[in-house]
Image (tube, rainbow, N blue to C red; front, side, top):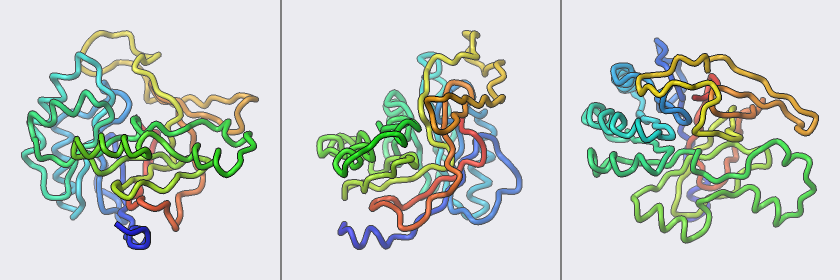
Length: 261
């Protein structure tokens, strides 16, 4: 698609929730629902079904967001796909944050629309970027991620993935390759995440008793901005929302009203 045509595309507005609120607020076109970073915080299937119904009732499309997967969670994620995807409509999609989620999804719904989560974006993160003196080429490199090289685009095409999720970086975001569309998440940009949650010691596959709803603010003289930790992931926060013109290829913004999970 020519650059001029891509730049003129309307930007879809999406709301990301980990727990359903009623009624859904106005001003959005799509609901993201689920979890990106911790499988133990993934909502119950019944709540996912209610979120799907609420999105459709509001005239919104729906994106089921799935997290980084623990080995013990794999059977559950396949069951979640089997129970929810038959109710999907045109425009609905599944976000995978772990390549391990692709095979069970394809087994259940080979034709489902799949998008690739920001956990897999390979972007250059962290507030220390603000302290660097960068020339034009260095800045361009630091605005890119994993899906900018032709070989990476070919890998996505082989797996029928045409949309990638990106964070709004402090240094900006480079235009995407012509073959891809992108979504920009804000105001919370992931900085780092771990499969090993510092608050979880249970080996149970049924939820988590840890108090990861408590948010920690992390400050350091080495960082110009504070970090926010929720569960197994740290974030920085943009005080200003993204504004047009968006980078070429970005045709969706995704708003997180609370610290993501």
